Image 1 (cartoon, rainbow, N blue to C red):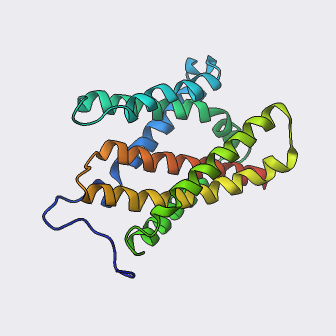
Image 2 (image 1 turned 180 degrees about the vertical axis):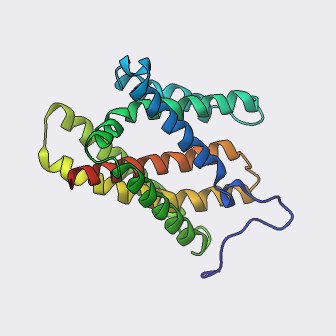
Length: 219
């Protein structure tokens, strides 16, 4: 019912979402990837290579399941994607370190607040009420991503001013959607905490990178 938190049945073990442990473990690997690209010879690799190459382990993860692949395989693909994502984010992180180092913890703090706020909103909303947003969110994300790609070849200054705010909005709504989606799937018997953690990490990454860009634009 509306106003009551959505919780798993008492007969089931606590869901990993309630601890939000694995998504934040992913952020540690993301940071390690960025640090590796900034401070070690890994920085000689063009950031587009891990940024695009990271989709390979991501696809491998989403193509697997606890029934068909070992937990080591699945944790390995998750770790590879998050580390390579960090390497791809290194230029933005490096620019922040060079100009306004405090922007990184500020962006991390803002991302955490957004994550907690929208997760709480989803938990205390009517069960399943957020799930209808899935189609529009996917369409909006793909459409905005396509505009960004076009902007790489045909620069549109206004786009680069607007899109970080749009991605923060999309990422925040994805947190609410994924929170309810994960719990609904869990109640239906899907206890794949690795894929659930990856869903939330992708939301966190979208918000963090966009907030960092916004802070950089306002310096």
